[in-house]
Image (cartoon, rainbow, N blue to C red; front, side, top):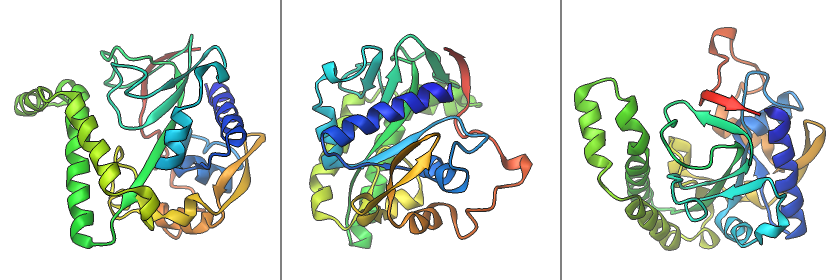
Length: 258
């Protein structure tokens, strides 16, 4: 599966270079590149991140430029897809996240593509943006959570939230990206992903001042200050692997086929 993911990353990188779009390998993928020059041994996915302005341009690339067996998935290209970020998928394969077996979306082996929108300087506005972004994610996650909840009350609550149309969350998230425009912001965050770091935002320069790093036999864009990025996400000791009992995939699969 990792070989297919690396193929997808290489295709993504080639398209971005061709169209002069900026991106970075991110999160565990960046950590793997720095610490191992490859995947973290127990990791199972690839993450890339882009500023919203570059992501929107990537969305405009003609599908004829992709490999015939590559599918660029967003909530616009797949009506069953419930998330606020994109995926590049390999048609003819399967990689189904645990708890998402019932979703009718395209489910081939994938890499994640996270767009980053503006984060305001004001603490109050930043908090408000974070609350609204969380609300959007909860509306969308309810499509999965109502099946995963272990209590009747939990299942009932998520079932009620699930009655809110997906398009409402998509529309609110779009409004956030317009109100807090990435081009006018010094910090950026992903509306479609949770966490304090996302609420407070990342330095925009981590997505504009770039170098290349080796990863699985190729070279891919990364923040010039990759050390600052990794310290922000993982803390000072990011170069030290966790103990064996904490080495696990963050989003396990329930099934896959290659």
